[in-house]
Amino acid sequence: MRRARMTFVAATAGFLLSLTGGGVAAAGTGPVPAAGGGAVGTGPSEAGNPRSARAAAAGVCSDAYQIGTTSYAYRGTEEIASVKQFYSPTCKENYGYVWVWKSFLDKKIAFDLAVGVWSYEREYLVGARYEFGTQNQEFWGNGAETVDECTSGDGALTVPGEQGSYTARTSKRC
Image 1 (cartoon, rainbow, N blue to C red):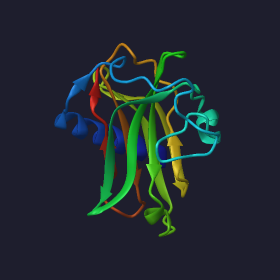
Image 2: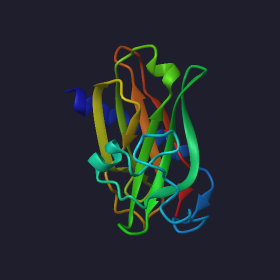
Image 3: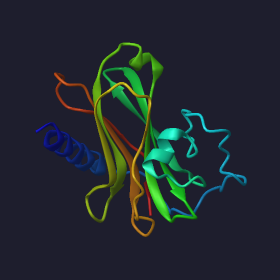
Image 4: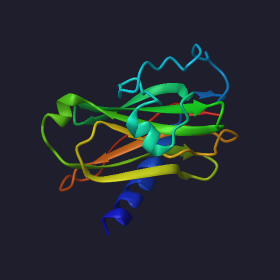
């Protein structure tokens, strides 16, 4: 039941966010990071480290780098998470990424989280990963074979007992 609710919430949030639109950029445009993707070590980071343990567990290719904007999820006026989209030239996949702020985690609230890549053509979350009752900080979506589609990184954080989800979506990339 929870998984069905989370899927519905993520799909609804995705639909609502798709209505807001945004700028459009191509997956291969913009600066490419220096060799190694700019990641240092294997620790997690707000910037997104494709070499972290959680990235490896999600199957993220180590050369992935951020494309598009960073967006932020708010709980009321409190910024609680950032959302990014990454692209791997080697694996030819996109990944969604969510980093939950320490200030929110310090509240010791268990939450559900959905992360992935929103496909504007398919109108659903591709490469989606879900975690339930978590208090983790770093979340990576599965690889999404969407590099020939218009996409955005997408994240939705749901606190059981609170109405709705706290969502964010990055800029549209085509």
